[in-house]
Image 1 (cartoon, rainbow, N blue to C red):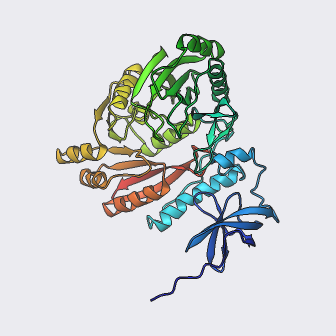
Image 2: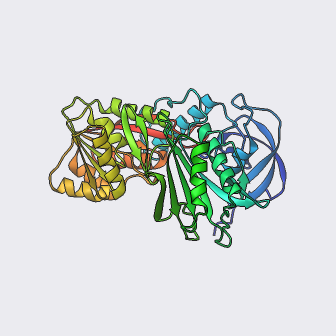
Length: 458
């Protein structure tokens, strides 16, 4: 029987190590006698003194005590709290280095998982100003020092760290959160107590149209009572004139899930508007809408460029949401069919098509894998299939339906390089060639990367 490998370090020991690499989560990697240590806020080439704070059989974690030299890719961090709460895990890295890091994540996945090292992966498309980009904030509310307080959860905990400036959020959203917080304090609204499932105000959610400037505020409460609403609403509207919608979402459950099932519209309607590539979209408080509108336009333009539509194509947009990609494609296609499992999103998509006077689109409610199987059995086909699935990637049944239907061309929009690579491997086995992959940075200062891949049927 093989003896267990001896771990060469112990908790609380101090060591001097050299950072050799980065994990996909952006942590520095050092090795002691072949044993890997993962270290936050450390970059390749740096020599650091560390303290071991956790060990396992195969790897451990350490914390930097002293940096003996600094990488040329290091920048002064904006705020320690951003690292504590985990919203900007790459804030210590120069932005061009972040873009290279993200490109490398995609290359690694293409080589190690997809086994497609020959596929070109282009340079990551970045932002001119990689801060203040988020158009949506979901901010927890708790009692701290006897005051209703907003902030963010410390990583891997339920402890709220008070914060007013979130760096990657639209500054107007930060201002709105503070204004709403102060109004709630003035009227003695009780903040939520997670341990006891008491109190009332759980989260303040703010969404803002980048191009329209319209603001939606969602007050997530434990109970339907929000006293005194008759004073709170006028005060919010006076403090933030751009507000077009205030919704109270009621979530009585003792859960980490933010939104509950019931909603009460307190002002306006359950929607605000924004535009993308010339189309206007109405967005409800539950709608999925990309959080970085500037980069979303670059992402969708990449989809358009890869699609090379002539106006004669039949297109299927699986996972079509509120119709953002489908309506972008429709102007250059013969007809676009959208598939979306969430029925309210389908209704939003139909309304958005009408809003933009786009008639060559059809939206259908259903699970993408089930609808695709049905359509392939009916003998339907498409010139172009566009997919933008959740992080888990494509379902096996969906991939099989694609291979059965054999659309001429496929554009795969991914938020997870690992599941993208897994799915591309299956699709190449099914008769497709991957032509190229374009990473796009929708989430600067974080480790997340979106990618667009072009596949052509052999």
